[in-house]
Structure formats: structure tokens, C-alpha cells
Length: 241
Image (tube, helix red, strand yellow):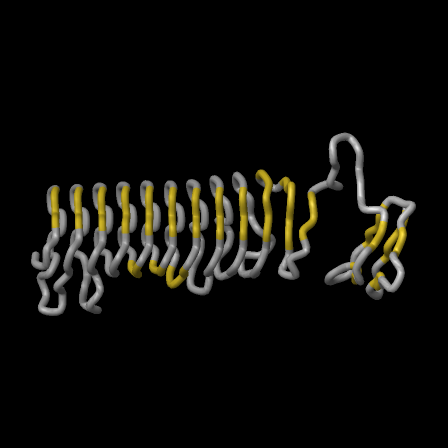
């Protein structure tokens, strides 16, 4: 082993730097088999921190941090952070944050995701980028979708491959949902205190709905201000109650 590395523990860093093309530098490996059989054939493999039994074991890539048993093991890529048992395990990507048991594990080729909670984001694969999943099992059905947000225990999104989906809730119940047009709806009508409320006038040109075909309305009396236009899309209805 060469290149200013620190290895503490049985077989920590074992076989590191064994091949002529394998010359990793400035790495820290602490724990039984931490960083073992690490592959640096592609010229990567510097500035990593692996702490925990088998963390970073059979791994390639640079600038990664993995803490926990098997965290970041059997994986590849760079600039990833994994905390927890098997967090980021068998996963290959870049700039991902995985916190919790198996969070962000078993993926390949994804990048820039945040998975926090046991099992969160554990199905992400190539093309599943820029997602945020927070909560036990949150977003664990998403595979290749990107720019999605799922918050809450076992909150799944409508499509495993869809983009720009949004959900906050618990299980199949929802407080808020959103779609790719950035239209946000609530699980029930929004309420302030004990009364439903809305503005008394429309002050800017508006098309209802922003996308698709929907029914909606407001409580009246309701005024559309002078020179302001409310456009109702074909097939939709808007009612003043």
C-alpha cells in the first residue's frame, strides 16, 4: 500500500495498490476489511474515508465518505457520502447523500440525490438524478425518475420513472402533492383555523387550471378586477359558491 494512506483493522486496505495502475493516495480506512480489494485501475481512488467493518470494500472512486458496516461497499463513483448499515451499498454514482439503513443502495449510474431514512431511494438507478427522499422507505419505488421529492414514512410517488413529482404524507395518505407543471394540491381543502377562506378578488390574468382538465372554484362574492381576465380551459369548470 502506497500514497499516504491510513489503514487500521484486520485486512483494512488489503490489496490496495497491488497493481501497477493502482496507486491510491490520502485515504483513511478503519475497521475489519474497510477499503479491502479497492480498485483504482481508472486512476481514481484518492481522498476517501471508510469507517466501519467492510465499509468501502471492493469499491472504486474518489472523494467518498462511508461510515457504517458495509456502507459504500461494492460500489463506485465519486463525491458520495453514506452513513448507516449498507447505506450506498452496491451503488454506483456521483454526488449522492445516503443516510440510514440501505438508503440509496442497489443503484447504478445515478447522481445528485439525497436519500435520508431507512430504505429511502433504494431503487434508484441510471437516470434517477436530483431526487430528494426523506423518511423511512420514502421514494423507494423510484428508479429512473428525476427531480422528484417524497417526504414521509413510506411515501411513494405515482410513477417509478416520472419526473418532477412531489408528495408529503404518510403511507398512501397525503397532505400535499404536486405534478410536473408545479401545480400543488392538498389532500383536503386548505383550512385556516376553523374556516375555509380565499381572496375576494382576482388581481392578475389567470388560466384555470394551469394544466390538464379540472374542476375548481372559490367562495363568493368574488370580483375579477378591471382589465383582468380569467380563462377557463376547455373541459374544465370554475364555480363561485
